[in-house]
Image (cartoon, rainbow, N blue to C red):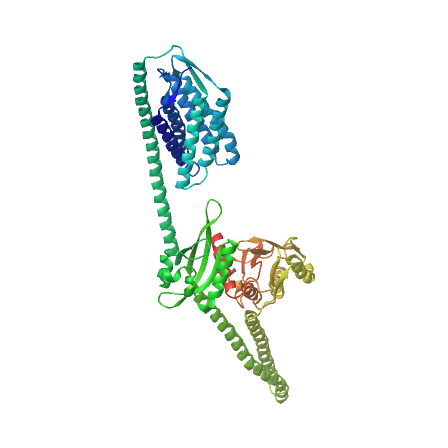
Length: 632
């Protein structure tokens, strides 16, 4: 038996190598999943070299720190084999837990495997020692060292792919370095050395010690250079990421400005904090003025209380904030803004901050107000005009009746006149034309009044079973359809909506009536009503027939008042589809058609599942219009 000990300086050096290697491996390993497929393998190789090579270097320096009073040498092939074992096992474990589909349970597989590999590296390295003596192992201590290696490896893999900040990473690297060193020195404690000779020459021992120290410094120096290069590559990559983030932030800010928006952030509790240059530029408030809930002082007094309540409710619910209010701009004018804010979560699911955008919609709201005012004026004008037209029309009707009454007197006075019959016939024909024109004008005035009233109607929304409602409409027109040899089919599962029942009945009643009227007599008529979901929580109803069809040039004009297309062999004044379009718009929807002469026509009515009126109806109608344009 011989007495052993350790060189304290080399022991400290070995621990420092282990800590630095652990930090480098944690940093490089954390980039594996977040990198593209090509760079992923580069960072994986770097992490394997850092952790495997660092552990091997720590082991080798620790071996050189071991003092046993005997000259020692190392088998180069076995020593290199121990290095390859460390790198290979570490790389395989990192690759296993670095897969995109890997989960926490994979650490339970890769960790023990990596630990056994590290232990194999250690004992392979010890087997490379060539000393004039023998050494034996204590199996319980060997088992303890393997257990420490497996536990340390599992923790290392778990930390490698767990999001951490710099300080957490440094603390983890310190724990990892001490654990790896603990495994090594526990393994060394498992060995018992015995010399073949009673003693060794002191001079030879001293020379060997110097050589070991120099060798330790060479290995440590090479290791530090490798780890430094790895950290340098990590720093360069981090700089690249920072540049990409900076460019992304600049693009985001430019996009916000492009939509006339103002970007702002709030703390997790929903209070405005820090520098907010966008908000300050908009409102003219200083940092002290907008801090906390001071921003609300720039909100219109009529909107302030509702805005604060809505914001607090959103923060408590941790959901997306969507709101609208007026803000006093720097120039003192009130402007309308649409607000959207989302919570930004950290790696643990807690809210880190709120990011929001105020988008200036003043011009849009002013345009909507002008449009509503214009529509109201048109409706009033239509009512006034139709009312004023009806008054003289009543007079014309009255005088026509008087002329009809005096026609008998004129006929009696001209009884003996040679042109009496011609005069009587011409007078009768003229009166007939006047009466026909009066009747037609009366219908036109009635149509204008009807459209005017529909524009001012107040709807009473209610949940509607569209399958039952449309089947009722079809049943009401069944006699007319049977007479023309047509079948009306209503799908079984039409989605329900919330809308005004009378308006919906008028819309689909007109469409089914038109389909029946304009069927092709050359083939049996078929009318089908179906529906499917549409973007924006809407439903797209389709009324399709196999009738005459409509020429492309007439697709738009059929919705115009008093306009009709195709052969005029059916009664009507051209107000049905105009009325349908007015009703659909008032309901917040849209109507369009697809038709080809000789094949049939399909009217598509897109309606919201829930009622939309006023400003909401206008906004949703615009969104629907944009969706349809994008789809086309």
